[in-house]
Image (cartoon, rainbow, N blue to C red; front, side, top):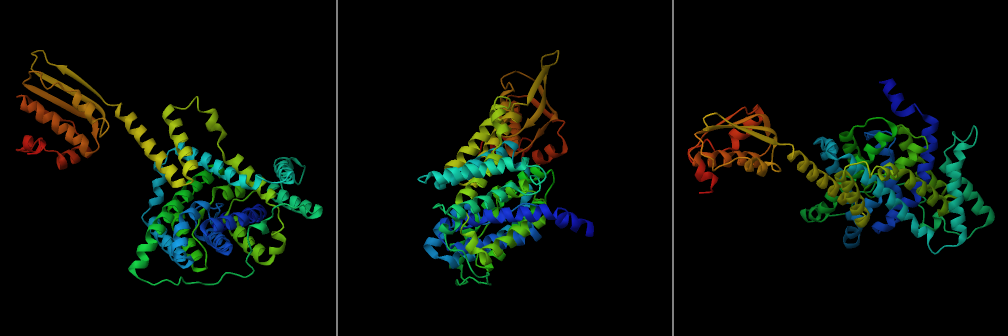
Length: 495
């Protein structure tokens, strides 16, 4: 147990602490921005980010992943806050947490295995584009100083790691933020700072039970929002966990992560925060800055709270150009450039799934829609491809009265029509044998196709023998098939 504790908490102390500081600095403007999107006070987003990051460090299933208030979740809250106010948002956050814990116990995190690699790639590329687009307001209608500071920040981020001895020790994004802040203060540059985004809180969060009536009417108001928040939060968290798994070459417990996200959101709601989930941008900042264990997430949350409460005066002077440079680095590092090079090598269906996922996410700014579109499209392509792998060979005996059909492959909704079309119902036969020893029947559409073939052949006066069904196929055929029942023709024809 002590070895496990050391591995998940204290095996990378220096890297985790430094990465936590960088992430905390990057979280501040984003938490404020997401609060503004949702229509609530900046403190709601900042308290949520602190609370979720700290709690998930203990109960999450993916060490090194950062969770906090996010834009995807904030977009879902706008209508609820505008029509019913903050108290109903806090209640919806609590219910969202309960639903996510339930999803964890139902092991819905395991559903990630149905998300194809092309969908994950599309999700990553779309998120990189959204992260970059989110920086554009800070780079439009501004003075040349902002462009110069942003360019200098990118130069520091990419060149500082090559500095001997200290280049690999101190995270370059942290050096970028500290250096540009010092330059802006020294030169007295009139550029946009963190303080211009909103007032930072000056007190610690307190326990806050939502002041809403405990009635079915309240439940009817918040449930649709809570369900949407739970689904989007889990989807983004599971996708981010998969990406961090790949970046760190380690595994994670997706079902534990579902429950952990739920616990973190309940804690956030009780401390006056909004619902949140895993953040791919901050998670990549954390990993690239050296964060690996649960300590990095805990450090990010703790430093975030300490900074905004006790160092607010200094933090408010950080130029937004420094944080824009960090986020552009994240966007560049997040985008899968190999996916562009592989467009010529990968199958057309894979490329279509990836591109559709990107287009839908960028067009709707909703990660759930993009992933859903990608998964459905990938499933359609897969079903179509598997449906083509069914072959039926037939042979006629010397007397010309007994034909044997040998079916090889998968029979299901996509290949059922092909299965039926392979039989000649007008051929004059005394007997037909359907050999299914190398076939598998998956669904009631396949069973209905078998019924149709057998009944049509028998209606033409042919004796039909079905043999070779494996146990699983025999079970579904026995349960739903009608061709061996006395009134098979009437049932099949709907009489």
